[in-house]
Every structure is written in structure tokens, then in C-alpha cells.
Length: 306
Length: 321
Image 1: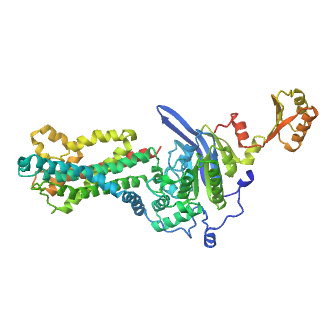
Image 2 (image 1 turned 45 degrees about the vertical axis):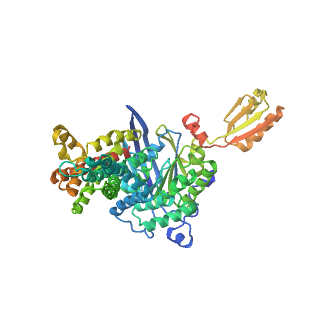
Image 3 (image 1 turned 60 degrees about the vertical axis):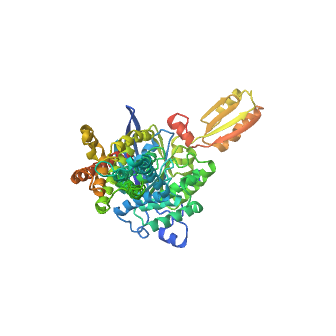
């Protein structure tokens, strides 16, 4: 047995020559400079990390679309189609102020879809990769700095949240009872996309934070306990201004990040409805995104180094 | 000793964990050097501190104190540089389960800055070389344990690392797969690849490594080539002669103890056990002694000096895998 592990094997082939004559790969330590290809700079590696997540998304595109639209679609079906029809003529009367419920609902539905998909698409796989499967090692041992890994997770999650918002928008605009069409303006679409992108980044950063600080077996509990109040009190189903009669609640919900997303989209899509001032939601979304990204990339780093 | 540049230098490495309020001293002052082109083994039982050391060498674990240089860079201060120069295969299946075998390789290459085309081409070559050409499009969960292990090694090699690290590469593999993997590792080593492996299998270290560090309780007990280690602890062979049950060996034992070249001789029931550096003369003499005493011999065995006997001598403990 011992003879096979002698210290120096006779054949130590030289990289380039062996590669030329022999199809067999040689294991050249360090790679010789002559054959080493040009390595791309950091930006490319970031894109590669992103490309991995997009490859996975593409493979499950159907599932992604179904996850994104099923809940909002059912919601508008019941509240913008079934309810107005069943409550007869009374239901078809526009809400106070001449604005139909569908009109209020469209930006809210898009906002909640962005939130759900941004948070879930980051935190759920991450929790698995960090714990049971330890797959995250794959990327931890790749020669990229950890902040870049965190950034790629956030951006990939944001892309999915952004896409979910875009997929949900036509669905919730098209489903409604006759005469109940939402009056939504897409004239300010560049501003709308910007709000959508900021919102997706913010929520994705929060998703990374959740994924790195919540224990894996408690994640679904956290979702159940958090997502419902956040959605219910996120100005999804009513504009913030409508809370004016319950002042303490109107101030309390300002802690909820979803409020700024709903109100931001409402400001862009339904400018006629009273909404939070533009500077308010823009500054909260921007600052929140920056804080969420910074903090979550720290918590990820802490999870990955012993 | 060959005079080659050091691939790894470790000086007085310590790691203390805080585990549920208790201080766990996992590594207590490891010092070692691995030369370029060497196949180096860290051998020790579970919990000896091998994996912690592996983690510190591969940037995954921060040392509490001590100096480490891996492939010319410091894993603590320049982790990305180190990661660029090494390939590490961890103990668990850390393949990306959302991807195919080939995609696992492709993306590792792209994370390192290779173009997609170059990464894929290298990935295909490696999978072919590892006998996995027909599995390249299989999702990870469809791979067998041995196949997954080979894909992990291929992935670690994709960036042509200066050092390949393997943490317990064959634990959980069936014997045939293990032998195949050994063959593969030897080939890589023959091609000049520097390899550092941790293992708790004595025979794995014996079969593969140029030099071995025997580790237990976070310390290096001995480092050297296998023959050096054996010489260090006496290098004795253990001969066992089994007689018919109920045989009284006291008479034979007395005469055996008078023979030359015998270090120790003990009778364990009807079994005679002798430690000797010279098998070729002592074994026939033992058989003659039994014959002369009119005893019938049922079985004889020769245990050559091995890491097992080395470990036993160094620690005074039976080796526990």
C-alpha cells in the first residue's frame, strides 16, 4: 500500500504540451499563465451570481407566475367582480368620492404582490441554503466578496418582485364587474417603474434580513404572523388618507414599509386619490432600501463566518 | 525533504468557539507546512479539530490566533485572493440543487470571472474526465453519492486551483466508489496537483498521502511521511499465532521470550501475540516452537506497522473512527 503514495511521481506533465497532445485534462496547479484565460473583473462576477438566480427562475417560470398572481387575482375576482354583482345596484355605486373600490385596489394589489414575491424569493431559498442543504457554501467558496453575494441576492429578489408587480398589474386591471372598471392611469409609467423598482429592492433587502436572522423552522411562523398584519395595515385596500378618522392608526401604520409602496404606486397610478406626499414616500423608500441592504448584508456575513 | 516553495504555512493556529456558554478549544496550536505538489493528509478521529482547521485554511472559519498563509495569501485578510487560488470540497453535498451538474461547474467558473463559454467548456472536459459525461444535464438530486462527490471535486478544480482541499472526501461512500475516488485523486496528484485532505480513515491516509499530520484533541501529535511515522514509533510488526482452544501456552511462552528479536510476547488464552521488528526469522521460529511443544496451530496473522499502530503508540488510545 505504501509504495503507491511515494512522494514524487515520475510523470509530471507540463501543462501546455500535454493539453496539446492529449485530450486528457491535466491538473496544473495554479494554471499556467500561458493557458490562463483573461479573468473578467468584479462586475462580471456579480452578473454571474445574478445569472444563476435567473437561470433558476427561468426553470420555474410557471410556478413563479402562479405564485405571483393567484392571490391578487382571487382577491379582485371576489371584491371587484363577485361582490359588486351580488350586492346588486348598491354595490355598483362608486365608493365615496366617486372612486370605485377596484381603482383603490389595483395599486394596492400590485404593492402587496411586490412585497410578497420580493421577500419570499430571497428568504425562503436562503433559509434552506443556510441550514439544511448548506448549499450556500457553493457561493461562499466562490472567489467573490460576501457583500457581492448579498447584493446579488437582493437584486435577484428585487427582479422577481418587480416582475411579479408587472405580471399582477394587467390581471387586476382586467378583472372587474361591468361598470366597475378601475380608473388607473399609466401615463406616469416611468415614475411608476421607479417606485416599483425601489419597492422591490426594499422588500428584497428585508427578505434577506429575515432569511438571515430567522431560524429556519420558524420562518413560516414569522411569515404567517407578519405578512397578514403588514398587508391588512399596508394601505392595500384603502388609501392612507382614509385612515384620517382613526388618527392613532394613521400614525401607527407609518411604521409599515408596505404603506409607502401602496401609496407610492397610488400616487403614480391614481393621482386623483389623496395620497402621501411624493417626497415622503420617496425618501422613506430610498432610505429604507439603503438601511435594509446594509444591515442584511451584515447579518448574512455574520451567518457565513464562524 | 524536497526543497519546494510552501503551499501552506500554518504557525501556532488556535480556534476557540463559544458554544452554549462554554469555551470549546477546537484547535490548540497547530503548526505545519505543506509543500507545493504534495499530497498532505490531516488524520484524526472525529472531533479532533480537522474540519475546523480545514475551515480556517479555506477562509470559512476565522482563527482565534496564529498565522496562516495559503497559496501566498492570508485567508483572514485576503479571503477572495485565497479563494481564487484554491478549490475546496467540503464534507457535505453543497452542490447547488437548483442546477444541473454541468451548470454547477459553469457557474463556479463564472463566479471566478471566466466567460460562460470557457466555464462550460472546462466543465464538460472535467465531467468527461471524471466519467460523468452522460450525467452533465442531470439535476443534482438525481446523482448518486459518488457522482455528487465527483462533481464537487470537478467544481473545485474548475478554476485550476493551486491547492485542492478535500474535507473527508469519502465518508459515506461505498467501498468501491471510495477506491475509484482514490484512483482519481492519485491521478490528479501525479499531474502535480497539490492536495490537502482530511480524513478519519487510517487506510485512506495510508493509501494516498505523501505526508500525514496525526491530529487529536486539536493538536498535531506527529507529522511526517508514513515510513517516518512508523520508524518514529518503533515500526514493529505484530505476529499472532492461534492455537486450539484450551491450549496451555505457558511452556511455549517461556521459550519464545528467550528468542532473539522479540520485543514483547504475551499469551491471551490460546493466542500467542508477539511484537517484533524481524518477521522473516521470528515467524518460522514461533511455528517451530509450537510444533516442538506438540501444539496444533489453527491460524497465524501478520499485522505490519500501520497508522493504526502509530496512533496507538502516540496516544495510548485505540483509534476510534
